[in-house]
Length: 446
Image (cartoon, rainbow, N blue to C red; front, side):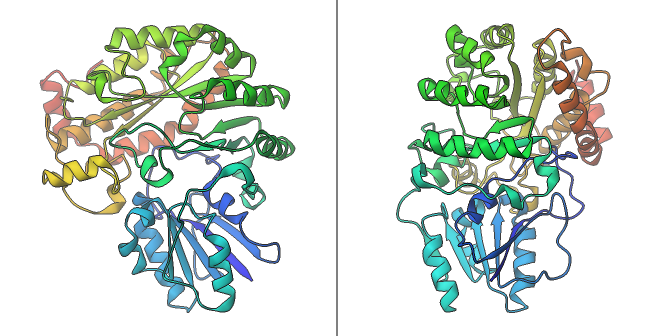
């Protein structure tokens, strides 16, 4: 039995995280682990190689994210026309199963691992059901190892990905994680994590990214896992919060475990009560102090900022860009607030009649898909483009990177590896007249 696993990507699209060495997929490699050994599996990531024509397959499994779902549907329709059964799963199919069902033999709702034995059995009988929905979340203690051997060499050359837990206890209204993975934190066993690190070590990956939504939430457990990182001599990065600045001993443990950087969701510099993870840091000065403490421990920061909250005016772009430069945020990540289906934000904005359209291709955090409160659609779109262009400038990047800090070469390379994609995206979004208007208002300046 030949099974084709596909991560879709619309040909010709430009996204901000495009890189010569793409991020190693985890969802499809984890799905691949559910198939028995007698299946022949092939994984195609269209970020690396577009799928052309019809690949030979007995079953096609396509994952769906909102921004790529139109491409997923087009591929699914193509295979269905050849009488090849198609299974659609992933985030978008989970929250929009009726829509997905029009393009699939079967739709998997939620996490797939618990339903795959039934789905595979039905497939072998020639009797796939229209829907498969797990009655409970997956317990990670006995989960199989991701089939990273199916990835393109470009995925594995530089970076490996690792998941040690699923679920998030927070309730950020713009995040779909709780709706898909639940609020309860579920953990992999230490032995399972060790086995995955063995594989990553054998592949020769130099860096590791821990994809847990907040790896450092349980610091006792994080310390135990960090000892494994140190043992395997893996430099690593992972999601965390500014609360690390309050725990000097834990910062020391992070440094000793070869932590390169923490990915921190700053989201906004104002109205901190609206942001669960870092609401204790009430103003930009408090945020700056926390950043300084983390930096002094020798740990870099990848910082995420979102534009388009109700309190954001056109001044926000220059303020955030200045903050990033002044606080030497090594790898900035800026996005447009996007009301994804399945989130509380979508319910709110849709209920207020502020959704502009449902062109899912534009739900990529790079395009404005709703009416902001405190600026126009054009101002939000152009301000985002200006920020991308400014922060990715070859003259600006070195000014926020300190060569005295650990891992300076890595951060320099990380910024310049994204430079081309970011500037291309900014150019595609650029509106000269709106830029002049913003400049006249004193916005978009540093």
